[in-house]
Image (cartoon, rainbow, N blue to C red):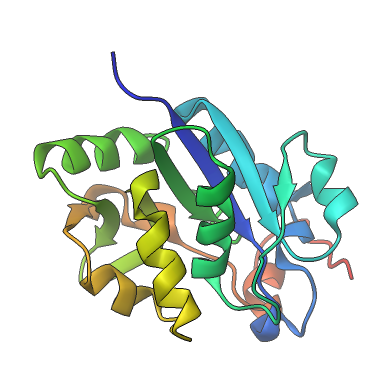
Length: 197
């Protein structure tokens, strides 16, 4: 029997490229981005957490536990991973960013297969020459090392990944699934957009 997996949706950023608004709550086709990610991620995992640093009550309305970073000042996706690893009751955790509402419906299965086949610490998605580091499956036992990394003042996801036994998983067949919505222009280029504070 395969080990259970917790999913975490990373929605704790400052939204700087979107003018400081809360990116996960922006609507695409009448649905908040975080909800679109939840709909695609939830069937692939045993439970879902949401990492958020503001609008906590609104995020809690999506029916998942919400956790904030323990490091102040919007410390980046690793701080969200740290909080989720601290909370997860499963041996594995998979992450997805709130601004990628088209993520693959087979994301977790493919990451899991690579993690197991390579006896890796972490499996991460890649499409073409781009590694999508926010889409990763990792072992809960990495938490102490991540704690030390962050306590040393480091914040770069790629630098932490470089310190691990990493498996990159090709999603060249689904490259468009990793399209993300980083700016208001990205959002407004889509139909039925509503920008919310």
